[in-house]
Each structure stands twice: as structure tokens, then as C-alpha cells.
Image (cartoon, rainbow, N blue to C red; front, top):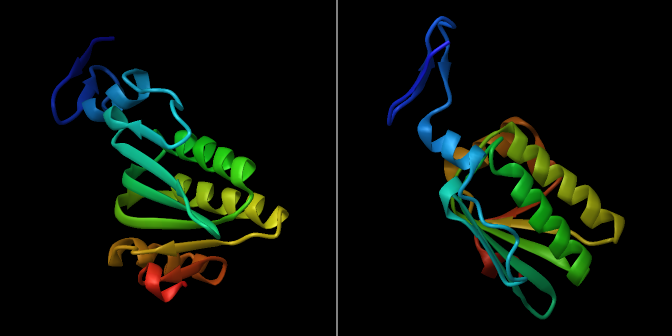
Length: 154
């Protein structure tokens, strides 16, 4: 079998099926940085940046980029780490979250379960309309506190 990678997609000759784009292949096979400092995790080659900032009553998590099958494990690991380290409510700012798939939604639910085990909550703010629609369609809006902005949560 011969594999060709272009900027848009790759094809494996003989299979007849398109394969993931080069961007996803780069994200999956390398170029990622590890957990790094406790204050910021940046995974630029995978299209996901996560920042944490401890506040008085909660931890602010800023998510930027895309949460999909290739980036969801890093997000899950980072959020579990934050829950274990601080034991506070999470305020997840999704203003720069451009895309989330079902695996990403699954991470949100898994983290919510972990947070509720220590009797805390997750509030999600600044969701784009297209992503908010996913929460509404899947009825996840009934599980999460979803607000327009941080001022409406305090």
C-alpha cells in the first residue's frame, strides 16, 4: 500500500478511503508538549491551548482551539490534575473554543463526575452558538451550569 499526505488530506491507495488530514496526523504522531508547568499547558501543534488560573473560590480554565479525538486525552488529564490539585469549582471559559466533538463532550462529562465526587461544580461560560447548540441537543445543558459570561456566575 502507498500512502500520500497532502496539505488537505491523505489517501492510502488501494483502500479507497480518505485518511485524516495532515494537521491531525501531526497532532497524533508528534510535536506535542507534555504537561509542563502547573499554570499553563500549551499543545499548539495539536490545535489546543489550555490555561489555568486559581481564583479565590474557583479555578478558571481557558480553553482555546479544538477538542476532538486527538486532543481530548490531554484536556482530560489536565482537568483531572486541576481537580485533584485545587479541589475547587471549575469555571471553564470557552470563548476561544472553536470546535468540540463527541469525545470532547465525553471528557466534559467525565470531569463533571469527578468534580461532583468532591461536591463541587463546573460552570461553562462564553460558549459559541454552534457549541451551545451541541449542549442543548445532547441535553448536557441540564448537567452543567452554562452562563453567558463570568459576571453572570458571580
